[in-house]
Length: 63
Image (tube, rainbow, N blue to C red; front, side):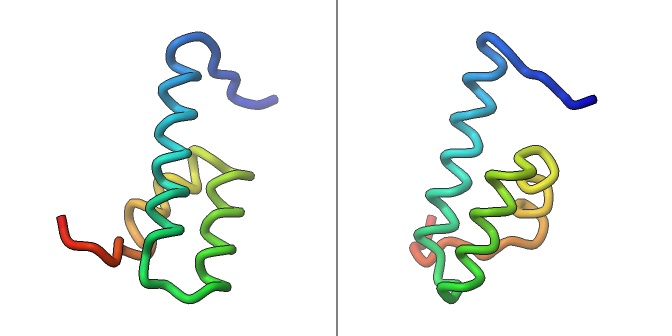
């Protein structure tokens, strides 16, 4: 029993997760930390995104 998101909400959620993965990739975190965050975002997108917002690595560029 899982959460199924379809249509425009699914597309929006996909874009949000892709944005989060790109932010992790551009962060100043180490390679292993980046890999773990990206895997967390890909395999548990809702929970992973919430945890990443609260505790994830910050972007290396300002703004």
